[in-house]
Image (tube, rainbow, N blue to C red):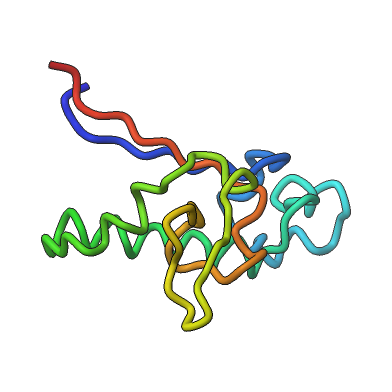
Length: 119
């Protein structure tokens, strides 16, 4: 592939998260609902996270807003390994590796990978 690619992983999530929220027709049966529902992640949280990353991607790639790259090119690919380290005024310290756009303790359970085009 000759395009830059990103992959966001929700740790412990199933593929059921795609139709979010689940269709109303599925509410009548638990097994039908679980075909769409995600047991490990809250639907509202998933939607907010998807909006965060899709917005950054579209701003970068379609609008050419280079500042949006900071939200996608995370310092460490596994969010649980990121370190939140701030000065008293809230600015990041040199050892800060927390994902941009997330408050302390809120970037949890995700992995974000970037693959560059093949040469």
